[in-house]
Length: 213
Figure (tube, helix red, strand yellow):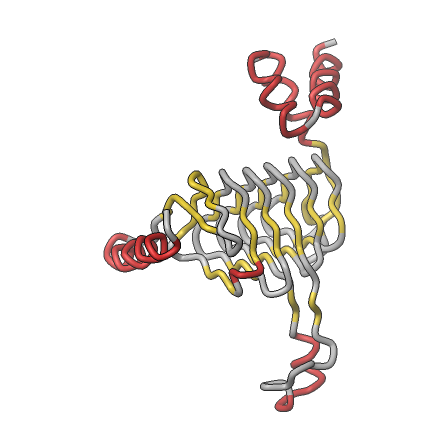
């Protein structure tokens, strides 16, 4: 699908959504020309600086999100971003406070943060989350609703706020959640291992077996 055709489809879907409400549209073309036919994106999500953004295939981006590629953002295959989420690669609030009226139009604002952000494959970002500039979220992660995430999040972590407004902390491991289903449906073990790795599959199965003892 050409970039022009994709743009026309999105414009038409946005116009239709005025009458029908937000819609999710299949297909996304990255700035490097790579096309993701199974990626689904809401007509009511704001993409800032999409040239700095790379989406993998099978990504879902729901309604009313802010996705900021200004300083580099990679969202790998299979990531789910629900609703009312901000994924950022810049921060200006400190610059605005320090510089006041001198901020607008300044080529290099004092205190301006520019950091590339990364979300690993098959991670889930719950509603009302903020992913701060420079965050590195591993694969298979669950970010619970209302989380503020900065820094590094290990693969397969479940993170959430200890209290509303506090930075998210690790609360669990998604492999232990996945193990029971993988025990019941062994036909999906190769599929799981293909993206998560054999070590992750082994840990998931060992965790499920331990619970059954």
